[in-house]
Amino acid sequence: MLAARGLAKSFGPTTALERASFDIDPGEMVAVMGASGSGKTTLLHCLGGIIAPDRGWILYEGRDLGAMSESERSGLRCGDFGFLFQSGGLVPELSCLENTALPLRLNGVGRRTADARARERLESLDVDGTAHQRPGEVSGGEYQRVSLARALVAEPAILFADEPTGALDSLNEEKVMRLLVDAARRSNTAVVLVTHEARVAAYADREVTVRDGRTRDLAPGAAG
Image 1: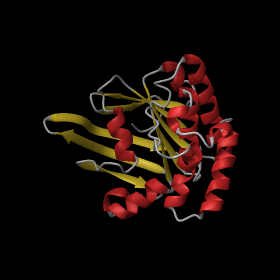
Image 2: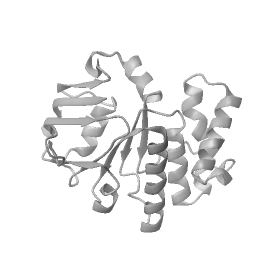
Image 3: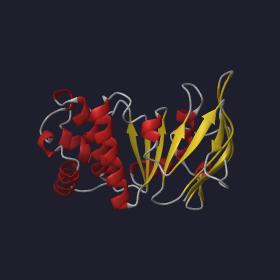
Image 4: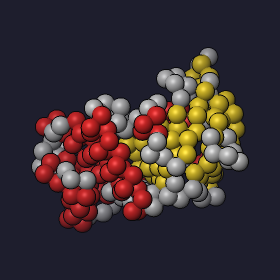
């Protein structure tokens, strides 16, 4: 589904990735682990088409991300790819319902249809009561579940989650992860889960470790 080989990325004199590789299949959840500064977030940003690697290639369903125009990559990020970050990234001026519906609206879906689908997604994550509240008016756990609803509302093929529970207490961490896994399984969404927490990585099917910009796949026989 998504495959990358020989990825290298530097920011000035700092090397973030060096000959990194990655694979994920439909419906699979892969945890990307590593210490702070190891390159795991840079890997996620390259795989998700947010930044371009200096070298190497990334194929999504046989299409080379490096050969795509920025508008084509933007289209992937609005449709096929979903994103969930530690900070959530909700728009503070919009209600939770409007935030959740935003990816659909950006894809040209009408307001009534987008709002209905957003309400369904919020309800499935037990945060439909936040629909008319703004992000600053909800709890941390609710905020992250609304962020998850927004990431999944367009039914992406791949969800890129970067430390999605990093700002939560252990109780909300467990709740968000259980909901994330359940939602992804029901929609057959692949998940790239960046984390440094072993208990979060335990939800994944397998692990890829990043150290000094290089990857190592812990699944026997897998590339990495």
